Each structure stands twice: as structure tokens, then as C-alpha cells.
Image (cartoon, rainbow over all chains, first blue to last red; front, side, top):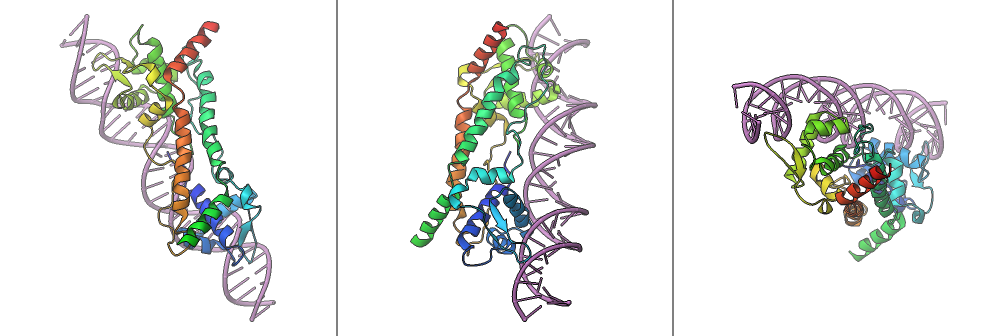
Length: 143
Length: 143
DNA sequence: CTTGCTGTAACCATTGACATTACAGCTCAA
DNA sequence: TTGAGCTGTAATGTCAATGGTTACAGCAAG
């Protein structure tokens, strides 16, 4: 099992937008060149990100920009914007009620599985776009 | 994105084995009845669990039993036994090295993505089969 | 040697990811 | 006002994984 590449591509896109939005027009073709994917892939994801209120895309003339400060955009925000919303674990829904295990398995497991997903999401919320941007500028200046 | 149902089915199987191994022969058909899936599904997963040293299956006569104490079996053990081993996040491998974002994105992200996966796995390791078994017996006795 | 169970292989249908082509609509500048 | 450039989205094709099922060879014990 693996998450789709949308989360990492979206993060890459946001870094491109944040880095270049003040100096040039950041189009889907431009970002596609940095990521090395088809521009349509970028446009599809940009639709998800703008629907989530993370970026704004100018119609007609083109070009994307952040819709809010980089400090307020976390990896969790990005993840939720581009991944389908569903439980992390797939649970068989209809165990046998006549079996002591079957009739209690959901009571035993549901909270624990939710806790695992929560731990993952909480860790995602620790990283902001602003941190990534800072680190990127430091690395670039050092080299 | 969702994990396969193998993890939850495997957990259900282990609870059945732990509950009933002392009083009856726990066959794939028996467990399939409690979970409500085809016995072949159970047998496929039992193969993974025994390969991981979690259960033992008697050839010929049939029947499964725990290969080690329930205290030493965590949800993470189960997860690793039945899920394909791979990174949680799919990362585009070849970004553009001429772009400041492209040439640094992996340096920025790899550790953070690994940390997210580690947080999830660490939470999985918190629950043991023994805990689930205790809770199951308490719930059953209370009712 | 029959019975019951396991381990596997084969098959099918469905789904999602990923990549690409195509095209309609919008905005601005020439 | 018309063309150029960009966005949004639909359609298509390929590929892999999942989930469900049937079939059957092999093993062990009565």
C-alpha cells in the first residue's frame, strides 16, 4: 500500500509557487518542468489545491499563487486536499455476531485503528510550508 | 488510499486462534466463519503469518496456534507480516536538477516523510495481542 | 485408504494510479 | 477583435493491486 504521488507532487508545486511567485508567472508548464511530469497532472492537482483554499489560480492569463501565508499551510492540509477522504484501514464490515470474537472485533479495534491514523496525521501537521521554504533557502545559500 | 483488509483480517484470525486454540482445532474454515470471508483468503493470510513466525499451522490434520506469547505480538508485527514492504509515500524520483526546488526536494522531504511513517508504526507497536485478548474477555464477561 | 485440512495456482471483475491527447473557455496584448 | 497562452476537464489506455472464487495436489491421522 502506498499513498498516491499527489501529496509529494503537491508539496513540490507549493514550494515552486512560494519560491517564484514574486518574480515570475508560475504556470502548470513551469512546475511540470521542475517536477518532470505532464502539465495536465499539475493542473489536476492545482484544482484540488485551489478548491481547498491553499492556492489561487488566475484564469485566462494563468499563474498560481499562495492563497494564505506559508506558515499556515501544513503537510496535513496538503494531504487532505489531494487524497481521498477515507479510513486508513479497510475493515471487513460484517463479522459473525454469533462468535465472541466476531461480535466484538469492531469494539476492540475501531478506536485503536483511529489512533494510528491520528498519530500519522498529527505528525503531518508538524511541518509547515514555511519551514520547508526556510530550509530550502538555507540549503541554496550554503551551496 | 487504504491499506488492504489483510491487516484487520489477520488480527481477527489471531484473536480467534488465541481464544480457541486450547479448546478446539482452529481451522481456516472455522476462522472464515467468524470473519465471513472465503477460507482461501484465511489460508493465504495464515501463510504470511506463519512465514513471519507469528503462528504455526499443523500440516495434514490442520489447525493453527500462536507461535509465541500474545504479549510479544503487536499490531505492527501483524501489519509488517501481511503488507508489502515499501515506503508509505510515493515520491517522484527524478525532479529537475536545474531547478532549486527540484534539486533539493528530496533532501527536504525524505526525512520528514520517514518520520510520518515512523509515527504511524510506533503507534501500531503500542497494541499487543494480549491487550486485545484481555479486553475481549472483559467485554464478554460483562455481558 | 479414506477423510479433512492446508497450500497454491489460476481466473475474473473491479478499482485506482498514472500518463497522454484533445479541446473548450478565458484573459490580455497586439 | 483576433490571436496567443494558459486553465479546466473529459476521454482513453495501460498497469498493478485487491478481493472473490474454483480447482486440485499433498499431507497426516484414524
